[in-house]
Length: 109
Image (cartoon, rainbow, N blue to C red; front, top):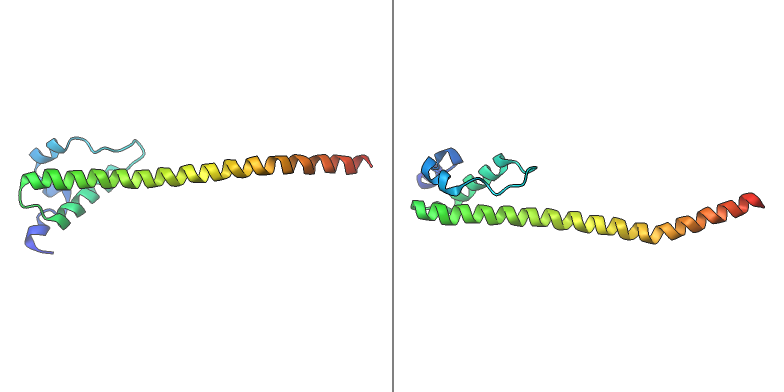
């Protein structure tokens, strides 16, 4: 890692004045702020901003957008899994009902 990159290897290296401009991280209650901070640090290290404006614009925006993308992917997967389960239940409920009726008929014979 170059000297330029090493100065921003973790969020503690980001000046407090800039952190205050970042505002609170755009996270949901169940999301870990440490994960977001690590993402900011990795992005800052990778992009190696040359000034505060680049740090604020490139690093913060990229980290926020990447968090949104990750969240959207998790949500999409959860929704698809739920829809698949509901679809299977709709398909199998009549079959289960028919099997139950068949079982009752056999017991009566």
